[in-house]
Image 1 (cartoon, rainbow, N blue to C red):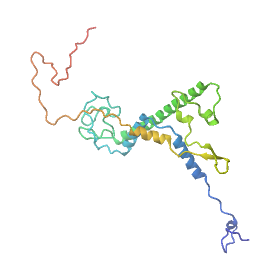
Image 2 (image 1 turned 90 degrees about the vertical axis):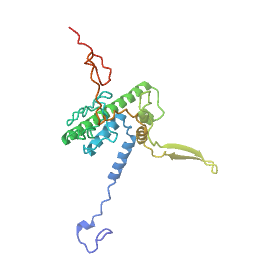
Image 3 (image 1 turned 120 degrees about the vertical axis):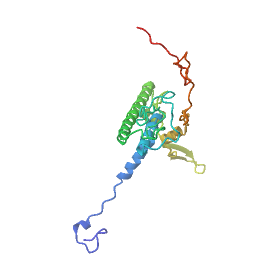
Length: 260
């Protein structure tokens, strides 16, 4: 017995079995993942900030200085850093503008040990997952509120009834699917017959476009306090009438303790 797929001169029964067709499951899986990525809502500013800090910590060596010079306000103009509030080498108080992936702006020592850096990366990943879950819950709640506000009025299509009409705080992207196919009626001038054709708009990811638009938004540049001068300027001797006067010129006022 010889078939088209049997090898010449072969008498094995296995050679008479037809080859299996290649499975198309993998491309379908990839396509479905691509659709899920396109339909995913855009990431918020907080999620993008946490993801950038996590990625910077993974790539950082810890000894690179901030190209912007850091900030020497010692948490007087900005909030205290929640990641590295103080440099353990020189004792400089660090504000929130001094990111933990850079070195200390004063002594140049690493602000985090490798183990502490890995622990912070895990903490950031947990915060990202928590923030995403909270935002998704709020989005679903807004969509549900919009559906409840519809009442018993009929919708135009099944897709609209599934998505719901967006309210003031609902997600409008859920009500308008991306790349939805439309039916187009046209009249042929020669045959005088009506033609029905399908039209699909170009594949444009709303999530990707929203993220690009948000990334282009320029964030306001915060005022940074530069490093103190290398030469120390001595202040004048305090007056004998006011030995407690503040020679730094911050106009501090002494408030005596209240008696209970």
